[in-house]
Length: 440
Image (cartoon, rainbow, N blue to C red; front, side, top):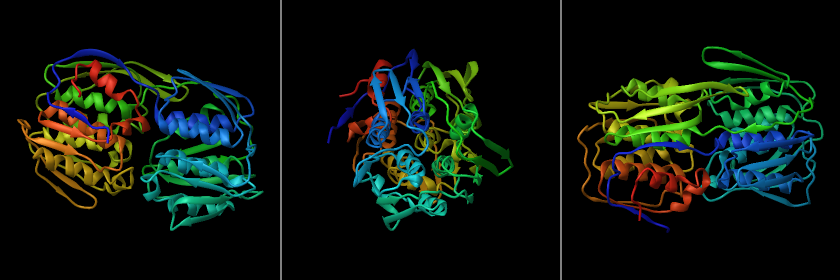
């Protein structure tokens, strides 16, 4: 089961950290680079399981790729340039981003391709992407919208008009990639969500128009445009940084600087929510890089944390960080309330339920529904008992959140499936130990 055990709280620290490249951007870089007719290079590509599975899928589709420790080169095959054997099976592993986005690129394939994933990914909903991709002309066979899925593309994908109502950046990005292969203009009315794909399209000068409305974006894309090379030094992932941000805030007398972090406004919901709770995080050396906003973050321990009613407008921009935000609420003075979070249960594990489970094990009173959680904070929370965390479908964020909780609140924790971190953040435990944590 690859257990770790934590029996002592982390002592005060004052350190500087660099974190690996952003997972969302690493996967998007590889998929878009594959559609160029030129050679694209990246630095600081995140070499986690999700990204390695992306590169393996592209290699099976005839894309030539060179990888070294901090460097990757992709020889693109151009639009509709994939070449592959009959009866091809692609394995998306644990990655919903890879699984859903690559389906957008397969709407133009001539032969059937089977897409599968691991046990966790095979429980997740793919109907949300099958329905709009069918409109392009592709055909799908699936197990009630779950993996494995068989895809057969069309010779001439049609542009579509689609209303995306979930606020899913994965669905939106998949449709944008599918639109690249059409003759004509695809129009997506998309509920606000992460905009990495739009920024990359704009940087590459692809024919995209975006009108930003209050509650949605209107995105228009013309297909059949050649894609230039995409050379990219990938900035650090705010979702990975979040574990160290919360560890620093809730540890005594500690300070941390994290360098070169992607602070794209569609990703920094956690910083906005923490600010509402009275936690100030400084951004220095702010600059723009290929459409993305980057900065160094300065984080300090915070004593007086305010309970909040969290506005739902922050949900999509903090969707991967809520387990950590719940830990902060556990130490706040008063009752915090988080609502409209059913999407959390559509992740690698039912994360909203797991957030409540971890709090229960810590002795933190909380009230859970299928969409919301109320957390009764205790600024003096100290844990003395034994806690075991297991059977969480190897969800990397559950594992890392439990590790952070153990180091902050004390107790004797046994946490299963340490290999889960390989999905998104293979060096997580090394970096935690660099800050002074004792992990057995």
